Length: 124
Image (cartoon, rainbow, N blue to C red):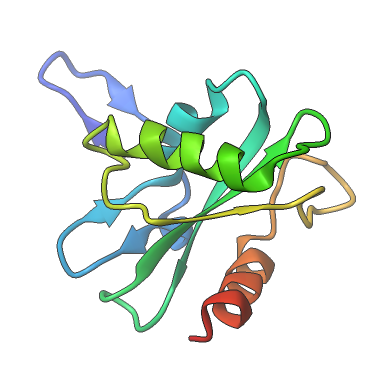
């Protein structure tokens, strides 16, 4: 996170969940907020694959309900990503029926497991 000129603290997510590319650092909370505002998205998760400080950002989307045309939905989400400077560099989006989460509280997403899925799908 960071502290602005008015002294307000802005929470951007866990430090360990940042995705550091060769050009920028992506933080989970602001990036995911863009996708979470889509009417068909239940929740989203940012993950990174590849070497540290040279990662490729990947978005995972858990839809509110079954998506019949995943290809069209992903295209729609990529257009959304390109429309915002925070997410313009995201080129890979995967749809998951349900995210791997900590059973004690359904909100803690295991991003490491999602990154493993992305590595296999992208052949990293």
